[in-house]
View 1 (tube, rainbow, N blue to C red):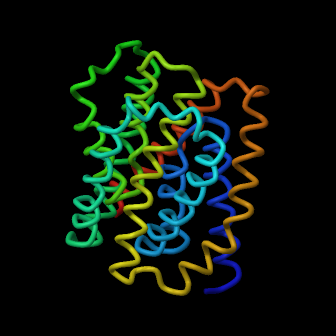
View 2: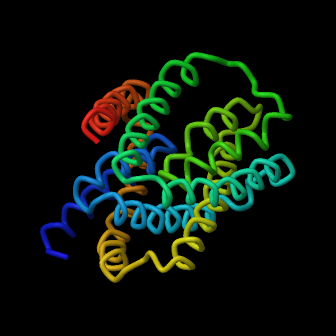
Length: 242
C-alpha cells in the first residue's frame, strides 16, 4: 500500500476520531463516508471495524464503572445477534448494490438523526430494546454505521450523561468484537488492513482525546449540523453514483 494512501487513510480516521470525541458518536458513519474513496469498500470496512473497536476498548476502560448493565443486556444481545446477519448481507450482495445501499443507509441515518433524534424528547419503551439492538447490529455488520439507533434509544433514557456515554460504549464494543471475530474467521484481514490500522491507531486515539477536550468550547448543535450536512452529501454521492 503506497505511503500516500496510508497518510490519507490516517487523516480520515483521525477526522472520524475527532468527530467521535467532539459529539460522542459518529466514528463509523464518518469513516465509512470517506474511507472507501481511499482504500476501496472491502478494505475500508475491515479497517473501520478494527479501529472503531480499538476506540471502544479504550473508552470502555475509562467508562466501565458507569455502564448500566442491567438496563443494557437486551440491547447488547440484540446488537451481537444482528452483526452476523449484516455481515452475511455484506458478503452476499454485489458490490455496486452494497455501495448504493451504503449511500441510502448513510442518508437515512443522518436524516433520522437530524429530523427525529435532535427534535424529540419521546422515550423509547423498553420492549423495543432487542429490536433496536438487532437493527443496529445489522447496520454494524453490513456497514459499520449502527450508531444512530443506539444513540436515539440510549439518549432517550433518564440516565446521567456519564451513563449515556458508558452505555453506548459498552454496546458498540459488543458489536465491534463480534465483527472483528467474523472478519478474522473469514480471513478478511489482509496485511494492508493491519498496516493501515497500525498507522492510524495513535493519531485516531489522539484525535478522540483532542475532540473531547474541545467539547465545551464549540457550540455542539451547530457543529453536529455541519458534520451531518457533509455526511448527507457524501451518502447521496454513494447512492447516486455507486
